Image (spheres, rainbow, N blue to C red):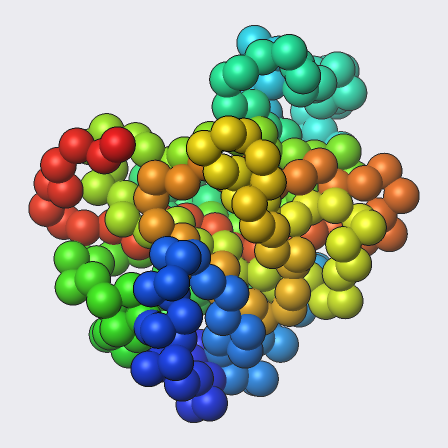
Length: 243
């Protein structure tokens, strides 16, 4: 199917709101049919890969449902723990890579159409207008699933040579509560929480790079998984040094 932006988006109002803090929640990004199709596809997808960079361990393994596709690797997953004493970025979450060369998942469903949607002339024009930045040329993407216990610790998204201008998270989880964790958290210069976005269905979170942020750990008692499409809006041209 062809995924579409909602016709109800007020670009001028969104641009003014984004300019105030250089980050923004945009509810109702896609039209209803598009959002429903992507959400259903994510909910039924069963071939995720778990991605781990924690306590010195770094691996990515295919899953069958919620367990390792290779039974002898299940102990790796069971033993994955984030080291709370380490200042390095760490993470544990499930991924479906959509635009990473050599890992592209081409399962024929609505999620596989997301890269085309994010790189369509309509979407690129939309994010250029919201950010006021005509340097945006393309978007990369992965689908993510954060299960209870999963998290992504503080980082800035700076990656030399990647020309990342803005990060985004398109939330696709229905009826999420703050008590369940998994919020996108922003930090100020003193390390205090400056802002936080709780996952909200069909809502795009977008913010300028660099910015210290994290995904809070999903609570052990959360009754469902946090589903989203994430990535960066990037330039084809070098963007110079980032602070």
